[in-house]
Amino acid sequence: MKNYFYNILLATLRILPPEIASKISLFFLKAYFKVLNRQDSNSFRYSGTQNVKFKHLNFNNPLGVAAGLDKEGNYFPALASLGFSFVEVGTFTPKKQKGNEYPRIKRNIQEKSLINRLGFNNPGIISGVENIKKNKRNFSGVLGVSIGKNKTTSLDRAFEDYLYCLKACYEVSDYIAVNISSPNTIGLRDLTKETYFSDLMDEIKKEYEILSSKSKVKVPLILKLSPDEDDENTKYLVEKSLESNFSGFIVSNTTKGEYMGMQGGLSGKLLKEKSLTMLKKVNSYLDKESLLISSGGISSKEDIEERMDNGAKLIQIYTSFVFEGPPVVDKLLN
Ligand SMILES: Cc1cc2nc3c(=O)[nH]c(=O)nc-3n(C[C@H](O)[C@H](O)[C@H](O)COP(=O)(O)O)c2cc1C
Image (cartoon, rainbow, N blue to C red; front, side):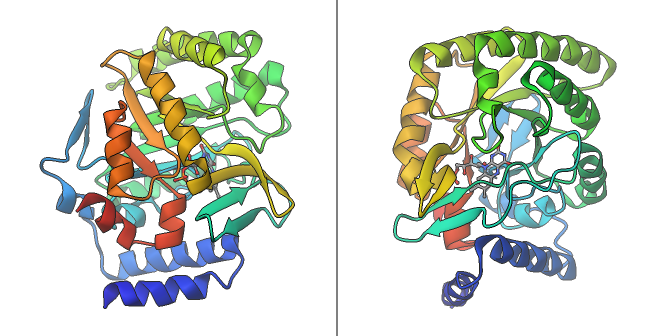
């Protein structure tokens, strides 16, 4: 009965443009969460044998929400109440951004995939942190904060944006995801070239040492990788970041693609194989200590098993949640 209700709701939402459907869904999810006063995360329902520990962090189960769904830091407690053990909010940039012009998301219903060219629309890290502080009291899961650079910041000065965001969000984050892999900010992916990446890592390392020595906790730094990176550079990125206080990787972000005249990042089923191939590659360069989070086209228990067999300790979803709604959590964890 409940699934029948969700199917009707999802079919209705699909009539609307994707971004409006997403805003309405998040608004009602938050309102429902408030009315029921669901302080406790439902992720406990799926805990027990599915617990994942990483350093001092305890994940009730391996399933989380990928970055980009809660771009403001306003919805993560409501999302967690559906059963997710962790939510990654953002990506935040130093200054507020509107992102690219509309339309900027299209659904490929047949392939259960999305294409987006949002371009880091977000309220800016300072407002983001304020939102997080307000909402964190209703949250008992693990909170990741994703950080990036503003569109107008040159690549030479990109490190300043990351340092600014790192300092601003350090105290409210359970982990910090450094995003250099979104395809929708011109030049962002060039930060993976040695000339930029080496400086970026050295600067982050220095700042991280200052922040972590002043704080009670060492907040893990995680690097989010593109699935479009070649083998040689992937190895370099992994090695250099591990030397620079990073302790894990999210594999992967969206892949560059085109659908119905829109160029942007492809997610969902059409990303699945690329993301898995990248996971295998990154896993082959890692020791057991590092955290591998798999993201990209995950929509079944078999997908999760396959990712775990290839080194993933945690899983993130976005597109399968958009297409299937809250029942996907039960499908993946039960
Ligand atoms: C509409 C949309 C917006 C996204 N925004 C971000 C973002 O701001 N930061 C980020 O790191 N990833 C972002 N992503 C990528 C997702 O976090 C995820 O890595 C990717 O979609 C692959 O997972 P999926 O196939 O389950 O969707 C976005 C994806 C979509 C579809």
